[in-house]
Amino acid sequence: MSPSHSPTRRILAVCLAAPVLVALALWAFAWPAARLAPRDLPLGVAGPAAATAPLEQRLADHHGAFELHHYADADEARTAIEHREVYGALVVTPAGPELLTASAAGPAAAQLLQTAAAAQSPGGTPVPVTDVVPAPSADPRGAVLGAGLLPLVLAGVAAGALVTVLGLRGGRAVAALAGAAVLAGLVAVAVAHGWLGALTGGWGAEAGVLALTVLAVGATVAGTAALVGPAGIGLGALVMVLLGNPFSGVVSAPELLPAPVGAIGQQLPPGAGGTLLRSVSYFDGAGAGRPLLTLTLWALLGLAALVLAGTRRPRPAATTAPTTPAEPALT
Image 1: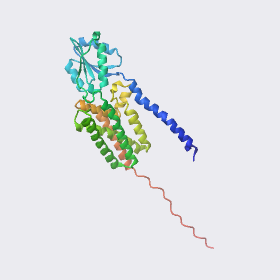
Image 2: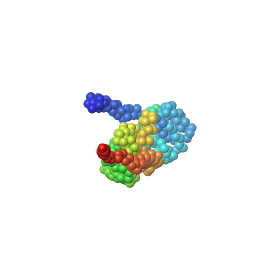
Image 3: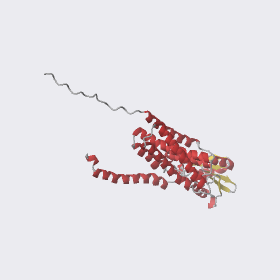
Image 4: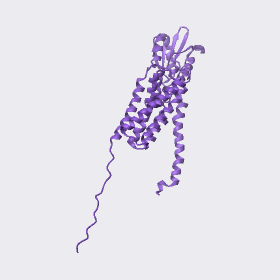
């Protein structure tokens, strides 16, 4: 036995791996959650320019907190919220400011906007709040949507790992991943929509988003393993679970996470899947284009890696010509 594989060194490797993994997990999950704050959070301000100018100036004093969009009136602001251009809007009226929110876009963001609106109200008077796109009554805090993302990611990782371990290649691997993703999507929509009532859109569209999310994760894991070997399973799982899930912003909003965590999360399948699911379930598909493209690219790249690996042929083993016994020398 070589010294590098001695029992002592293996025990030491296990002992060191555990705290490293804990540190990584705490950094990925706890740090973003402990630093929630608005960072260029899209916010509308509606009303005549002369009336909204002081309010816009006060909001701009919170450097980097809000990305302000001006609208002529409350109707334009409502439309912008429904199209997912802003998370809410402050409307200046003769009676004082009013706040329009969309708790379906993120209850944490809606609550933060209420706090910000109260701080801008003269004399601390209460600000009337209208929830333009409310979260479903069965899940007002978005708990189901937030908690439901991790099982989807784990299902994708498991599907990709099984395809690798079972030695499926090429078309068989693609068929296995696609079948697993479709079934996982159907089960997930039956639970989240049919049983828990946390989704309110069309069943088919929601199931498609959930299936595409699982497929993007699974194809990435299996494709990485096909290119670099079994270690690709761990690498894919590390990116999707340890980075993709906490960086997704599903529980809060991407613009509430520390930079550049929110932006990175939206480029990974978990974050794109969560954003796309909100769009198709609560906003009639508004804002679905970018996350749909992100998920599709991840899925296609992973499947392409699988197909490419399936076309490779193992090199034939080197053969040696049989030797014939030497003839005895003639004497």
